[in-house]
Length: 235
Image: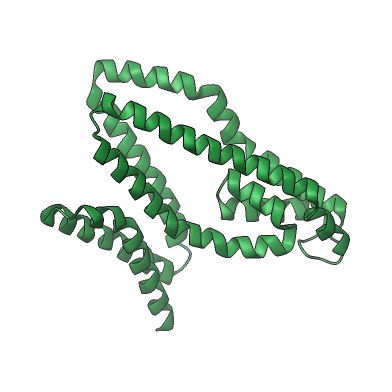
């Protein structure tokens, strides 16, 4: 295991990890630049753009804490560079943790087991890398076609695309939330309380015209939901 961790934390892997993360940061900067340039075309003011960016940043803080907790365990199992590389690209702690376990099991061992060899580490690395390629390949091949489809739909009825986008977001959030809520009663309570907290906060923010509250709504709702789940577990 010491030999595996020596390779897992080696300089070449650190270099590769920083290159991948640098690419992700570069993409984020480019996307923000393009979004700012495209904002006037969709009727967004500079203030609205800044608010949207700030809201996105604030909303990402909560999920990042959950990922950070899993990060610590992954670092101890597969090393810091590979963990940084995978989480930096995919950002899903659950996906990467599952992929690491599957890769180790496929080789006939377990993570951090005495017989976890360099070959097993290689199997884990390949499993994590190949497992995350699906949506990246789909995005690369079909993004342009989806853009053309969007324009065709907007020509017929511009409101339809807004409805589809909203439905897609609601479906994605509902899928992710429901997958956690079925785990236990505490998870269910946390999810339900967070939903109602979000609704109440947004209504108060709209009625009182409190801009900053809208930006922090998701983060506040998540904290309230997690707190309620915790207190429920003590009962």
